[in-house]
Image 1 (cartoon, rainbow, N blue to C red):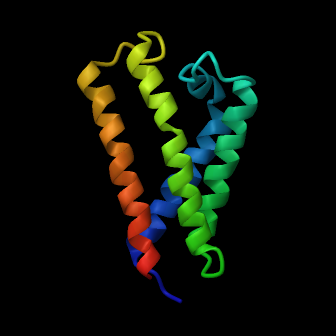
Image 2: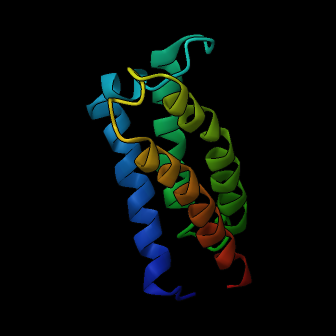
Length: 119
């Protein structure tokens, strides 16, 4: 089955993002809420999930399950985005409007993933 090019773009985006969790884990650990345990393990687990789900959306047998997994993952990442809004250190001194834009981006990414359920 041939999917539109933008589905593959989304897949590459998640695969690259997942790989970055292993290359630059400290950057991700810095934005982890303090109340979550085992930051490094969670960073690696989320990176592995992003890679696996990115690959999964390219495979017809797994595509829809991978899409639901991406949506669940993106929803769980709201915790991080709101933590970045509440902590100056976690927010990396970025302007509040940019941090709020990242929250909005999550909704767009969820919509983008759900769009491919029809294919």
